[in-house]
Length: 74
Image 1 (tube, helix red, strand yellow):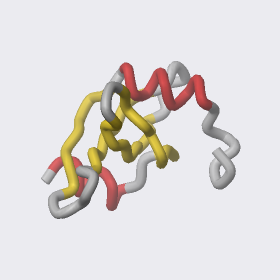
Image 2 (cartoon, rainbow, N blue to C red):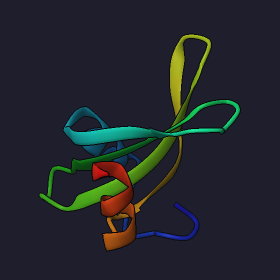
Image 3 (cartoon, helix red, strand yellow):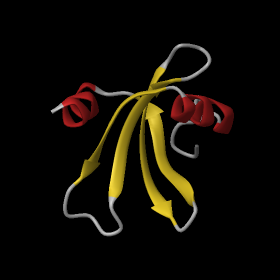
Image 4 (tube, rainbow, N blue to C red):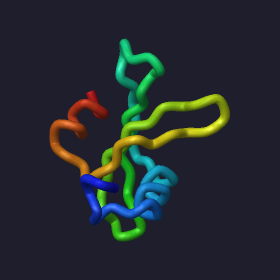
């Protein structure tokens, strides 16, 4: 949220709940998951997350870029 103040925590959580696609990034440790989803304002957000013991940690979220969309859908 420091780099993208237009994206709130609520936006990220809504987008995570409303995922429309996701993939993982091979060779990462811990395994990084890439996801795209719509927030409550119908903005498509890109997110990167890891699963930590019993919960997800989303460490990157911003409006989706064409590069990210290609990576998730390939």
